[in-house]
Amino acid sequence: TTTFYSKKYKKPLATMWHWQFGIDDMTITGRTWSEFTEFIDILNDKAEASKKTLLVWIQNASFEFQFIKGLLSWKRKDDGSFDIFAKSDRDIIYFKYGNIEFRDSLVLTQMPLKKFKKNFNTKVGKLSGDLDYKLKRTWKTKTITDAEMAYNINDVQVLTSFFHSYIKPF
Image (cartoon, rainbow, N blue to C red; front, side, top):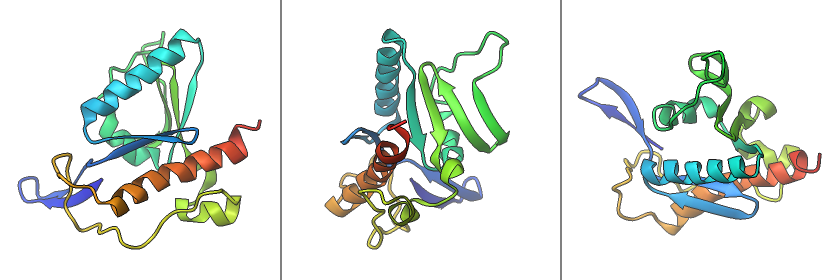
């Protein structure tokens, strides 16, 4: 995401310019919300057809949920509620979309991605350095540099490495 100050709304806003999703050692990427929702719906259909629940880890689900809460067609449970567990409106711990269960890895581990390699001995560590967070990017940004793409993909690979080391064996 990119955060910038909006003169129109007189507050900081954030916009997505690139998304990524890891499945095992593969990372799927996209640039638009429609690509993301189409991808999530395909995953959900596959999970539903196999009568399985797909577990997805998100580092800071509270932040990410603010973007996607209005994008997906949420189903209500039998009692009329949504399958969301939160400490408050903006402190999301868990949410479920169909047969996809999203959990917050930040809540579970209580640490940023940069500490995973040291504390969990993951195969992949967080990259640091040259990503310019002040640069305003959107889905219309024509060029994503190799360094930006590597940075984005690497964040997902830290989580998939964590998953394969600590969650999947059980």
